[in-house]
Picture 1: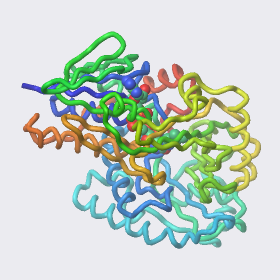
Picture 2: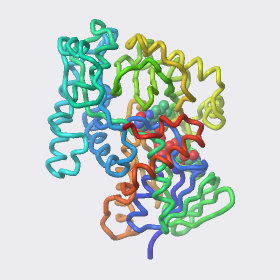
Picture 3: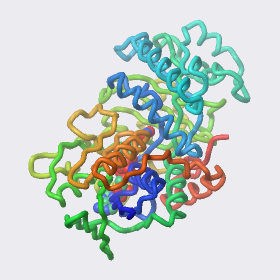
Picture 4: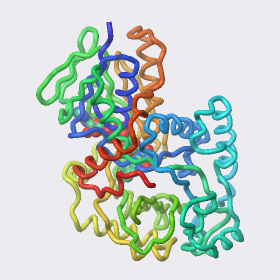
Length: 463
Ligand SMILES: Cc1cc2nc3c(=O)[nH]c(=O)nc-3n(C[C@H](O)[C@H](O)[C@H](O)COP(=O)(O)OP(=O)(O)OC[C@H]3O[C@@H](n4cnc5c(N)ncnc54)[C@H](O)[C@@H]3O)c2cc1C
């Protein structure tokens, strides 16, 4: 007999787990409190190698690279294919040469993955995973006219070289194959895939408010219904602790509220890559990230408490409750949205912060509401970027910090079902979600972005 798995939370974790377990033939009851799937905090970068994070371990970087390749196979329509340029300003205390051993290690790991399976060559040839440029090369690129299309990797660097002060940065500059990932097209893919499966019951607008242990499973009750399942997955995002509290389970975790800002840079010229300007997290010169979208739209992160980070935006669970408690004004933002003045103020600061590195960016304007939300971090180390699945009796807690790790968690949960004797079949890869035409995914993504009041440029695939 086929078992039934109840999943609480249809974010990228819950939706990916639902698609993977449904592909194995299991019955799925997916409960999502919101009106659509994957409607939580932003997902903008794939993180194929973890090169945004200097502080994480080499093992986390390898895991992020491998899991990103899996994610590209599951959500091919959601990838924004452009590299990332890593710049170390003179104001940052680090030496960019310190990045190189890790980049060499990742290149060799990627080569190994591609040699084992040629289908994994999704970031291009391993020889081109990254390249470095010295000051003279950047100066030469700054003299070149803007390319009308990208014919060779260096073409990506021309607008960067022409728009930053090449005397204010340290060398080398790094170009690495780290792509973008669109939350709207991930949401669209999940929604299209799960809606057409007979073995999946999708319960939207259904906040789960009670979960009770039964002899061989669980009873889950949401707004207007109760269902019995054999196994329970808690993928409630930053509210994972609320479900743990309902079950009387305690576990340490952090929750952090953050935001990224949406701008239009009308005077922008050329085809831009992602650009990150390193800087110490939390300091005035904290890291600045420029993420390109079509039609001169750019998303900005600035890792200072006045821009992306927030005063008391990072909270921890305690002995009494597994749910870290964010201050009420953060919950209001998540549930009801932002005040217009704060959108203006924080976006204006993000523009000024980016203009420290790209002076002409000062002409950019606010283009829409920020992407924001709270994310869970299992344990008590805020810099963790890996995922964690922890098990109870017929119970799995799926806590991801980066979306590319969701598929690894889905595989671990299926293995737990095998270990418990609840299923016998060896896992097959999730392939169904990849079959959608880009246009179908894009149309659905545009509908979702409109319903969530975001500008359409965030949903469409760059041409
Ligand atoms: C500013 C910012 C930028 C980020 N950028 C990136 C990035 O570029 N790349 C990346 O990979 N990650 C990024 N992240 C992290 C990423 O957003 C999260 O890791 C990811 O969304 C977590 O997915 P999740 O499915 O675990 O949780 P969520 O997306 O939060 O999903 C949980 C779901 O559970 C539902 N839920 C909660 N309680 C209940 C209940 N009782 N009943 C029913 N449903 C419930 C919620 O409505 C929600 O839809 C960013 C985060 C922030 C804040």
